[in-house]
Length: 130
Image: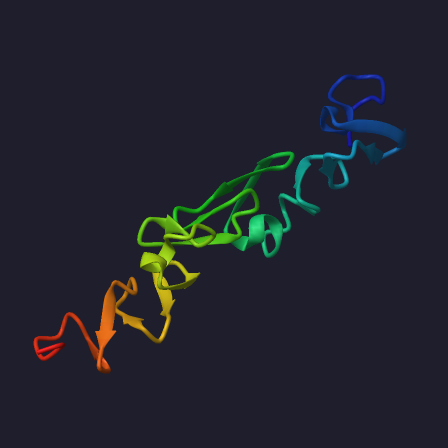
């Protein structure tokens, strides 16, 4: 790749040159020139899969998530400020399926499952429990 095999920048300083234009990368980097960090089995240029397709691999094993996802692999959507893996997501009455999208239990309704249902009427309606 235009760098002598005995230079420190060979293989992006993340592997060994084994023959002309051939690198043997360490376990934390991939690519022809060992230029891509690996996060949870995917190189940073595998944008469809790295960091659950909800962030960027900025260093080995380190995902930087978009603002609507969290978790080591950006695998948890955030609903109304609460990550989906926490018990208080969707007001503790539903499941956070995608950012700010809750699937409520049959007993609750509302965008954040915040309204109990009283005789099949959500509590935020004026005819509820009257």
